[in-house]
Image (tube, rainbow, N blue to C red; front, side, top):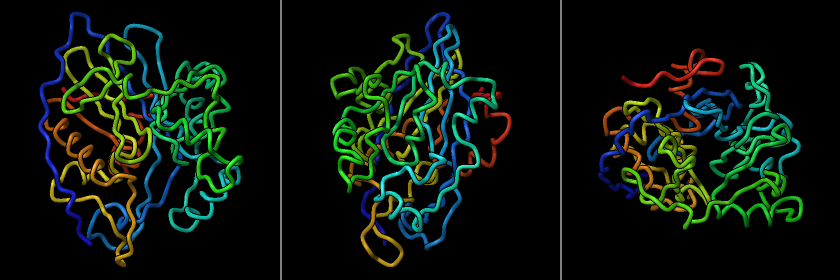
Length: 307
């Protein structure tokens, strides 16, 4: 079933680098596999499942010891998820976790307990992973996610959100007023370190509190956008004729996004952004990027930006 969620955006130029501009070095982290039905992602696709990664990333500041993880992928202990998650996804989108985020970090020579920040794009099961190994980290989430945690499982037996998704005494929730700048086509952004090296982007179409990361990847003007679930297939970004699905192949209503109209706006903004020079993007379930880059772009290796 086709949608009518086509929209377009334009992007103003990204900020020019300053003298000695700091940037972020980015490494991929394996964090599980999820088998996603394509008809639930792109309008008009048939019911076939694509094996997709649930990607996480390690980002290190070029001029200091500051660093953070973006997303934690899928937990290995599937039984610890809420019953609502297990009931819905065990058959619809089967998952496996050959290598968890903490294992990926250790394989790359890092210790989870030494990570200082973890930015979570949103509270869906395939992004929250297991926070337990990150004993010193401050967790950063979109502010709308707070209510989901407070009303989470097991207190609310019907909730699909774990109340233990993050350690609440070490969690910072970014409310709309915290996104106090704009960048490119995105009207709501927060400069994480205050030096223009990395921005947290407010992208609420997918779900409450959904956030993304836009990071410089060189001192001379290269950028990477880490999109979480802004889209579930990169063709929605690269092909303007592709549209977000709002129904399954059999015609039954189904959308991967809480607000399909806002999600289409978020996608259009990302499409406008990546049309700017030297801007690249990766989404959380980017199976094409994963196949092409598994190896050198993953810790202990790192992503090489476009020249």
